[in-house]
Image (cartoon, rainbow, N blue to C red; front, side, top):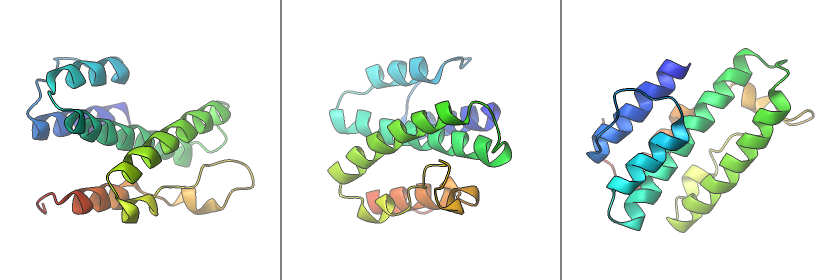
Length: 135
């Protein structure tokens, strides 16, 4: 899982023309480094959206594989923060279709749709709504 997240971060950085470091230890430090390389606020916010999507996908994937993990409450708290940040940014850029593809939080009593959720559809929706060329 961490290797997948790292590869996705490098892919995002390359697409944005950023200079990735040789090694990633803390995603927040990596994000801060890349944000400093960008000149415009909208570019930094696009990076933020990408990083939030990567983090959300990684955390949900972990919980899908380990639903009884003792760290689940803490991860749900982090996922709730990610969801709030993503919601704010997606609304700012009027990505309404993408908003509807955010996962349910994997809290007790929540719909079980998070168990089969994949970030791929959300990622594709964000790219489509932003007008990115199709792969």
